[in-house]
Amino acid sequence: MSIGTLEQPIRVVGDIGGTHIRFAISRGVHDIHRVWVKRTADYPDLETPLREFLSQEGMPHIQAAVIGIANPVSSDHITMTNAKWSFSMEATRKALGLDRLVLLNDFSVLALSLPHLPTEELQLIGTGKAVKGAAIGLLGPGTGLGVSGLIPAGEDKWIALAGEGGHTSFSPCDETETWLWQQARDVYGHVSTERFLSGAGLQFIHRCLTRQAGLKEESLSPPEISQRALERSCPHSKRTLDIFCAILGTAAANVALTLGARGGIFLGGGIIPKLGDYFAQSPFHARFHDKGRFGDYLAAIPVYVIRSPYPGLVGAAAHVFH
Image 1: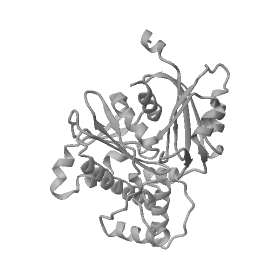
Image 2 (image 1 turned 180 degrees about the vertical axis):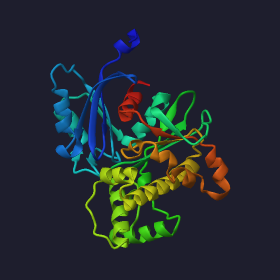
Image 3 (image 1 turned 135 degrees about the vertical axis):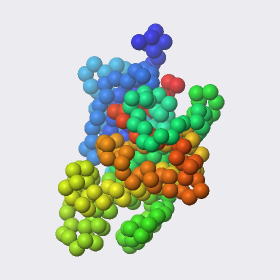
Image 4 (image 1 turned 45 degrees about the vertical axis):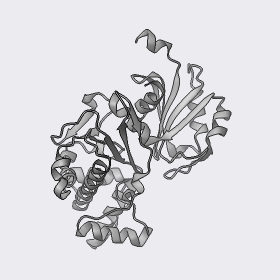
């Protein structure tokens, strides 16, 4: 540890998704300690888990926190889309006695981590090569579908995009996806890409395929569907995961073309990193190239699966220290 790192003030860095809360303390992008992980559903708001984290024995005195959260951050009041949280940032800051509390969209924070992740924590899918200084795309299905990107802003400087690309309208690419779109349309009205590219989306696809086959519906969790697919013990689970990965290929290609992301497409979230060797052989990559005249353009873009344990915490630290 360098003297410069020691001189940095300690911050809380955090990453809050629809499923998990992750907090840690940090003095730098590569100096993250005391990682603390809990379930989001076990808490009613931000203040309660953050107070619990800060109250641990031996915790240093901390006056500032930077946290990524799976939600738009457009005003003081946060009402989470994929969790039953509703709170005021300023009221939370005051209640905890912090000088500064910064909340950012979780995928903007994840995007900020990308230049700092070691190569051994990234799995290359395909043979593309990154163009230095080009835009980078990011998306990841988990409890919801996060989408972001990095836009170059000078030497080793980046602007992270804060958007809600997971809620753009879903566009089917074959007869099966058109049928699934209609099933979702009948249930939800507007059909966003997130309706399929999420844990709930895996469940929805599986229910539709099971019902189509005239079989009794099972109440399977997303991990159970994925596990059955990987074990090839359930043909409907395998087909579900194949469809899911094909849809993700289309969504990733759309992000790549929209951003001109020749610096690479990165895949995060809670689902894809757990699929192991299957994902590289899945329909994802063929669908990623399936853009007609721009197939060669996309084939040249590298796709990486993020396999870092806590990339959101790295991104929160990067917002503070880099």
